[in-house]
Length: 261
Ligand SMILES: NC(=O)c1ccc[n+]([C@@H]2O[C@H](COP(=O)([O-])OP(=O)(O)OC[C@H]3O[C@@H](n4cnc5c(N)ncnc54)[C@H](OP(=O)(O)O)[C@@H]3O)[C@@H](O)[C@H]2O)c1
Image: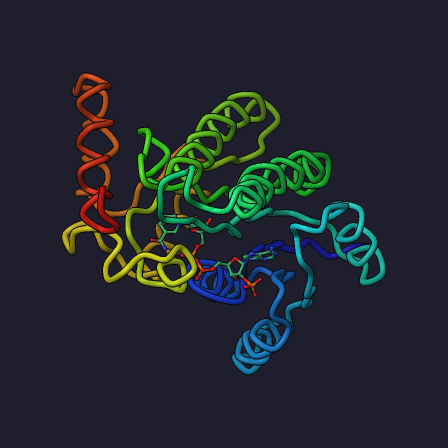
């Protein structure tokens, strides 16, 4: 007999750690994945201390490839079957595409796009059997081109498009698929991306707990897309009404203020 679990990538910090707390508080047994084992273990201890089942910790670099096979083997050892997949691990980089390191930008595509796609597809049979779902973390950045963070914005546009299509393909099988599109959230993301100060205007900012709760509720309700906070929802709708050229120029000016023309 296997036990159903929720697998969360990027659970060692930020939005992923809050998603873990929210899923655990709603009675889901967890598998926590990221590179930093000590942070995952501390979170597993914290969750176990509340009387919930102790999460399984898998410390791994998802950028190394072969993830679905490695995760599948670990789950089989512990008699666990994936019910919910939460593809949250990701990072961004601020700067002109031609001035940022090419390898790092390709690694961003690997994590934000390839790994998310791999884990979404690999566990469809399991989430179907377990009557669960997939929560993919995109961003409001997925709704328009982002000069100054060109590859990051493009990677999140992929996540939005892929996840909405998957929602449609899997809904007749009873599988929930949701794309979560946060605006700015104060986490380690900003330091990793090299963003000085805030990522965006305060009116758009929401904390990781708020975003995680919105994502959880949306997934459980079978919603295709969740954009936490009404100003962010507005921000995702605006590009529909603006000429595309204007939107690109506005984004260029916003980002250029951070690192110069
Ligand atoms: N913060 C924002 O403003 C914001 C806004 C919109 C969308 N998002 C999206 O939300 C998601 C979570 O971001 P966050 O803000 O919570 O960022 P964060 O605090 O930097 O957390 C990122 C997580 O990803 C993990 N990770 C990074 N590289 C990894 C790798 N190679 N293998 C395994 N795990 C890896 C990190 O763990 P380790 O370092 O331990 O590996 C960490 O747990 C991302 O997809 C991000 O694009 C963030």
